[in-house]
Amino acid sequence: QVQLVESGGDLVQAGGSLRLSCAASGSIFSINVMGWYRQAPGKQRELVATITTDGSTNYADSVKGRFTISRDNAKNTEYLQMNSLKPEDTAVYYCNANIRSGRWSISSRDYWGQGTQVTVSS
Image (cartoon, rainbow, N blue to C red; front, side):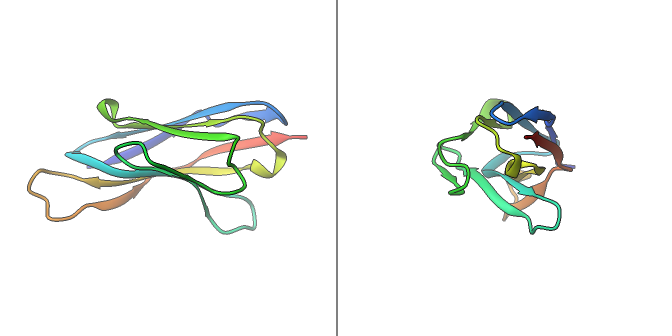
């Protein structure tokens, strides 16, 4: 079975930095788009950033210039470097990946991690 596990969430002061990691494991042939989403209390889950296999990225306007998404294809791992953190960045951050589970699989599907808490104090 495919599993995504996030790590790196913590409590940090405003202006600080955190680096989140998401490792995919299990029956994986290839990983297409990977991304990070977040959900704050009382809010809907929102897209933070995505990255394609060849490194093309997209960011939410609220994090542009502060967050950087990256991936290590050899390790099936993606990262989110978060700098200049603000209290409004406080949320549970979820890893997402579109994964083809085998060479002969017809299609791929999305998988989600369990989430990691990021809390930014003012």
